[in-house]
Structures are given as structure tokens and as C-alpha cells.
Amino acid sequence: MIDKETTLTNIEDNSLPSGPDGSKRKVMYFYHPDVGTYYYGCGHPMKPGREVTPETQHEMLKESRKFNVGHDCPVFYGLYDFCRTYAGGSVNGARKLNDKLCDIAINWAGGLHHAKRSEACGFCYVNDIVLAILELLEVHERVLYVDIDSHHGDGVEEAFYLTDRVMTVSFHKFGDYFPGSGDIRDIGSGKGKYYSVNVPLEDGIDDDSYQFMFKPIMRKVMEVYDPNDVVLQCGADSLSGDRLGCFNLTIKGHGECVKFMRSFNVPLLLLGGCGFTIRNVARCWCYETAVALNMEIPDVIPDNKYYDCYGPDFKLYVPPSDMENRNKMAQLEKVKAEVLDNLAKLQHVPSVQFQETAPDFEIAEAFQDLDEEQNMDDLRPTRPRDGAS
Ligand SMILES: [Zn+2]
Image 1: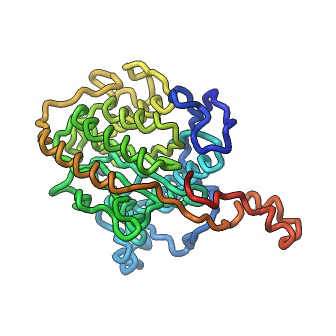
Image 2: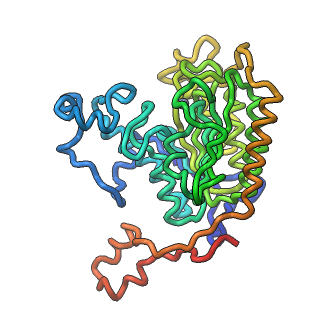
Image 3: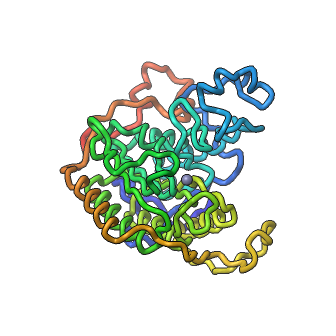
């Protein structure tokens, strides 16, 4: 955990105590491979005897097909622990934000945005983002999800497509590209109409074009939606030179999105995502950790175990390539205008009547020796009951 000097004093208000200048933040960083394995909250724990392993996958062929495990999402040793670890980190990050123990929680192992409720998809097995957002919704009314991976954040959008309690905003390559969804006309449905936002982009987008879209759209989203928390999926396959990606962002350009979302002074969960040129993924999330902490770090890779991977320049920042930017200004203007127009249709921030929730496990444990009936009222945490002011 990286603990900056900020202290938490303003617990009544949801805005951060560090003030609107955006200089100081208390940051928690989940990095241990076993992080989250001790989270035993609500849910349906998988029975170890039913765990799919390379040895048992043939016996479970039917299940493998049902849950789409096999091709893009192969069974490998430690798969179950891998899922527990990355999902546990994200859920724990959300809990730390709920408990106001930090302003920014980081889990670079998380951000597996393609997984669906009952099937693995696109290298993603368990959708840790959805689980983390559900955790945030236990305490807060509105959560904003922002996705800067080059692929559409389909799993998260699908999970919250019908609700106004989560707004999802995805910037992605659209057209002949995995997963194929993310059309600008997909705006949510029912109560969730206009709460799904898709910003389709073309190959080769550079820093300037990206920020031309990102900042005005996100500024408007923050204004009309006024979320209690922001979850930012920082998929690094939108970087220049990614093995599978097709964008041309620099690390500073990518990190500018983190910097911008951080500036709104709202609790922030930073998650990873795709990224297939590993040395650049490490560079990117290193830089973005520094952005979270508001620290400048030098453009030199320090000596480390993987130093040789960073040659020949051994620098932190990666220059853009000379690939063509297929995003023409007129098209970007058109997309931006349509998205802003949809956002303008949201007249007010949605509110929700909060129900009494089950007590936290720790609190319940502390009270376990007391008479249950007598103390249930004390156990229940205070939740907001009215809509947003
Ligand atoms: Zn991706």
C-alpha cells in the first residue's frame, strides 16, 4: 500500500478530502498475487471438487461448452486462483473506497471487461469490474464506468444495460474488431436508456484526437451524472505498438485519461485490462500509478529484474508510430455531437431509495456474542435514504 499524506476528515460528503486541486490522494495499490483470497463476502463459492483443471476439463466438456471455456479462454493451471486473485483485488478495492480508507484504489490485475454473467469471453473469465461495481452500489447510488481499452467494454455494459445506477462509457475501435459490439446507437434500454455510452473510433487514433473526444464527453458525463464513484478500466492495448491493438496512443496520452478522471475529486478505482506488448503495459501502468500519486517520474527505466526487456532505449515513455490516423476530424465531430446530444437528454441525476443492507461481515462478527434480535438495529450501517441533493 502506498500511503500519501492525505488524511480523511470529510466523511459526510462524498467528495474527497484532498480538495479540488487534485494534488493529494490516498492511494491503495493491490499487487500481491494472493490479494483478495481472504474476501469471503456474499456470493456462491465454487466447490473445489467441481473446479475445472487441465486434468478434468475433458470430463466436464459439457460445462466447458456451456461456459465458453476452451478456445480464447483456455483452462490452465491455477485458473481458479487466478480468477480469485484478480477479482478479489477489484472487489477489495471497492470495499476500501466504500469504507473511505482511500481516495484511489488500484488493481492492475483486474479490468477483465469481456466476461459475461455465465460465460468466459475474450481472455476474461470472471468480470471483476461488475463485481466491484456491485460492491460500490451497496453504499452508493451512482457509479460511473469508463473504459479506454481498444476493445468495447461489452461485459460491463451488458450487466448494467437496463439500469440508471451505473453509467458505462466505452471508447473503442468499432467495425471488424472484437467483440463487434459498441455501436454508437447502443445507448441502454428501459430505465437504463442513455446510461450506456459508446464512442466508436477508427484505427490509428493519436493522443490529440483521443483527447478531443475524451475530455468534452467525460466532462459532460460528470456534469450530468454526478457519480459517487468512478471505475476506470485502463486497458493498455490502446497504446501505440500493441500486438493486437490498432491505436496510436502514447503512454502520456493514455495516462492523460487517468489524470483527467482523477481531477474530478471523486473516489476512483483504477483497473487494468488488455495489453499485449507486455513491456509497454508495464510502462503504462507504472506511469499511471505515478499519475494517481501526482508524482513525476523520470524517463529512465531503473535497474530491475526485467531491465533487458526495455531495450534498446530503456526509457519509460514510448513515442507514437507513423501509422495513419483514420479518424477524420469531420467524423470525430459527428460522433462527439451525437454522444453529447444523448447526454443532454439526461435532465437530472437518478436517485434511488436505499434499502437496509446486510451488515458487513466484520461488524457481524464483532457482535456475534450479543443477542441477535436486540442488536440488529445497531448492526445495520447507515445508508443514504433520499435521492441525490
Ligand atoms: Zn482490449
